[in-house]
Length: 117
Image (cartoon, rainbow, N blue to C red; front, side, top):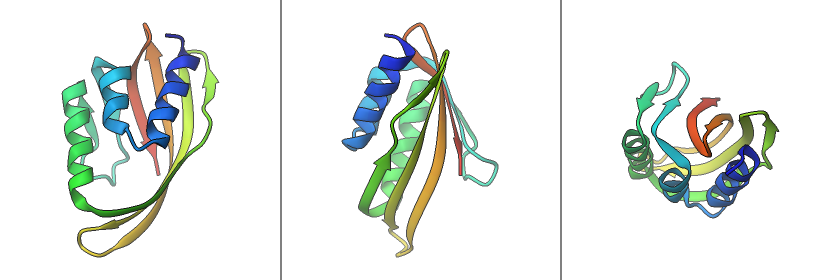
């Protein structure tokens, strides 16, 4: 798949709340995920690690109120999207988070993702 095809597929999965399927389908086995220094986990390597990180996030959430994902902006082997999520965590805190997500594609698969929030 081209970068454009991977980007649109990822956006489609995320808009449906199918983030796990996005990783399983679109990510390389050796993909890397990078979060800001303020995040509990800053770096995860490997598709299995990225899936585990997603599962940990989902376990902390009591209720999803909404998610938005912008159309992708593509430049060569990279694309970015703006995402926001409105969730209530199990501790009762409701958070409306906004982030910019940057992805790198090689050989038809996501090889890195980095989040800015």
